[in-house]
Amino acid sequence: MALSACSITLGFSTADKAFTYDGKPIQKFEAWIGNSDNQGALWPGVITFSHEYFTTLSEHAVPLDLRALNQLNSSALAMDIYAMLSDRLHRISGRPVVLYWRNLREQFGQEYTGDDADRNFKKVFLPALKRVLTVYPDAKVKKVTGGILMMSSPPPIPYRN
Image (cartoon, rainbow, N blue to C red):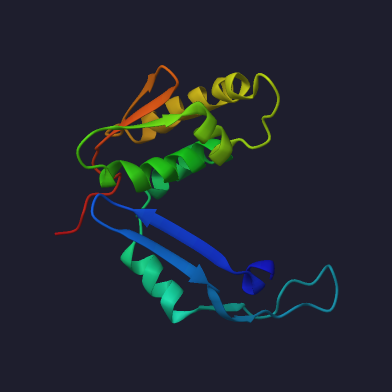
């Protein structure tokens, strides 16, 4: 229910344009609540996205391979890395992009703090990345000094013609 009352800001950029959505994603939320803790909902709930948010999602959607997600489902970090790579790798044009450990930690591991935060995060991130690369074999990513290098790669689900 908290999501139905939130405001959200999404943004991305490509080589030739930038885009931002700032607004309420949920236009309508309807849930049936049971009379007791033991009783589930009697009817399915309904969530209606705002038109603008739905359009934004549709135009910038990134299809994910559900088989890959199922193989990664024991690790939220691996699933997050897979989603990020699926979104970003096919949008890279020209030069490869380096993501530094600090930036990766800020995105995926904010709980790592202190003097060795990046080193401790890296110890968890690299095995998760290795798992992701087994389910997304076309992803061109490699460890470099200071972070990871991301190169243009096909999306995990091929484009429709």
